[in-house]
Length: 282
Image (tube, rainbow, N blue to C red; front, side, top):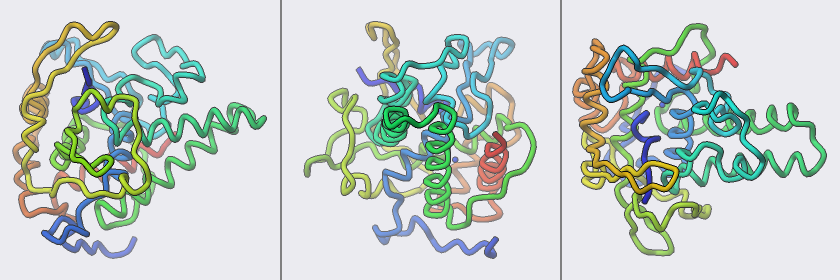
């Protein structure tokens, strides 16, 4: 079964926002950009909510855009992944949907190839991280219609994490593969990648809603994936804000997005901008 732990953890020129998610299909976000934003979200946060017990909740990630989930198993004493694991995207949560897996495995495979070509480990990591940052900057421009923010100091916050979860609003319930629409959560897609044309297909329109497929999800746990639970992703995001008693609720975030765009003065946009700015301090 496919897992979506990633989705529960489960992103200048004067700000010029056109209606980036208007009815014109050319304005919808490409699923490649969505995969990159999801990888960035994993890179920044992986909160263990401990079954709702706030006293034991903790953040496994370091709040930095350093490809931690590709190279290091943050759930296992920061043990380094072997090259085989890196080549398939690192942490299992980077394999949880085909968009995310395509991006993570491309970066991981590039790293392994560089090592095979004789590049030193630290140099190879720097090269791949630079590729990742360049792609993220392009994705940020495509999605939010403003340049990637300059780095700032500070620690990422749970409020910023909640704002980044608005990306789930335009997770596509179905995408086209080999000319057929297939559910993003279909287990037959695990370990498969999208080609360049498929990566450029457009996702759902940002509208403050979740596609129906994400309102009832089976999450199955390793190692044998025989223990599963049903999750409503919308409710999981909503209760995240409630659990940590955050000032801006997830409903507030979705309300700001009902017009189909991120506006420069939206609180959700402000939090995402700050999150990405802080995350660049390696």
